[in-house]
Length: 328
Image 1 (cartoon, rainbow, N blue to C red):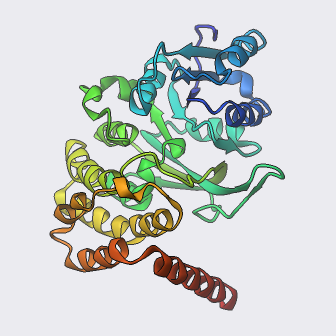
Image 2: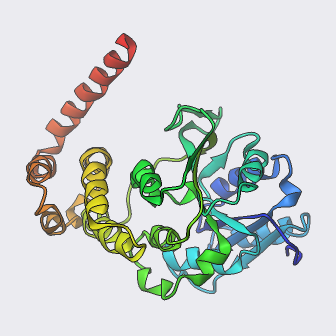
């Protein structure tokens, strides 16, 4: 159990039945420099794969690691809240158990946090292989810190990645001030609602382009893709953003751009790879796109196109992008 002390940072890892991934995540975390200066929390959602036994032994060896176990699976959102509630650090990062920190990440993060941002967004890359450990290029070119006094510009630049838990660093005291957090349980975006709510604060907002981690991509989804990435995401940006004090125009622009680009990629990717599509309800899509007629046409084609044809079109599109990158 971590001692009561003044940590600059808490890294909290919510986990459920992914012990082998968790072991890799913790190994790469414990190999970091200055690891003794941070608090590490693992919040276990009642795993049945030996996670409890493994963590019980691990906490005996490190005084800055705490392990908490729910008596039952309370779902991901409530487990995220448990992580926030237990954090003692001035800042807190919720790290996915299948996302792996790169060398020097903790040391670099502690240096950046000395600037005392209201909110910090981390640059990340995609994991290609666990063994050997291979990852691709990060989202942003590594050019140092992007510092914003305008939270609107920060949110526009962050875009859909405001939903990526492992890239969000919160100021813990601001999280504590957010009221009625439980109302967002079940949205799959509770971390993003809380992030937007903390952005009422004046100060600096930072995007750090240092490549911090390799994120695992989900090959399957255990939820209704259309409910989450249309209805829930639409509600997150338009309602959650409004609660954070952002203007309706900025939020509408962000929703349009991210849906046109990233959500479109999600739909193509998961329609080509997932087997449980019968549970995805198209009725969630159309009310969210009522104001965006071009998006409505695009997604009508994408969700109704036979999967075989969509796979073929996706392969052609990927190859054309590779050729374009080579030419440039």
